Image (cartoon, rainbow, N blue to C red; front, side, top):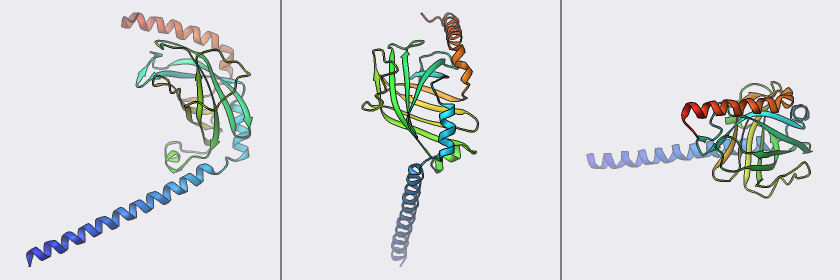
Amino acid sequence: RNINFFIIMKKFLMMLIAVVLMTLSCVMFFSCTADEEITKTPVSESYISAAKEILQDSVVLNATAMQGTVNKTLLDEGCPLKYYLNWKDDDILNLQIREFCVGKMPLTIWFTIDVKFMQLNSWEKEEYQGEGWIKFQGDGGNTVYTAIDEEYDNGNGGAGSVTGFLNVNTNEIEFVTNFNVMNFSSDVYLQKIDPTRIDRFEEEFAQYEKDLEEYKKEHGIE
């Protein structure tokens, strides 16, 4: 009798586990489906209009050049990096980086990509709380090693990518650019866009280079 009891209990527990797993799978499936529909829903015209006002011509942001987990810009605050911007459609923005080589980077990068704007999914809303947040994302970015100019906007065809978030109410931005070259990325940590930094770019970059030299001396880096 005891053996039969244990057999019955074992079967019951296995059935219970199967039911729980099936329920969790259904919840995850419907949650992912709902999130997919959310990201496919167009961003409101007012948000896109605000994004166009914030992201126009060029912006200067602090960024770190990361090779894997190693900060090649060396300084924790990164370096001032100029991003060239050109709107191609209502919700498609071409983003370019030109002649990017700082700190201990072993190569010079030019990069171009088209990003599209979308709504945040449920998990992203947990991290980026409050009104005004929209997501921008792009795949197929091109990394090249010769100069590009304003006419070069071929933002598709490569393997680079961008994933980021913009708050159109507070001007806060955060995004990662994956160049798909030697595990390099450009990480823009959460910060506010200041349009006046364009006028101070040369001055800020000169200060970065000065701070970089001091850092190298302090740490014995050639």
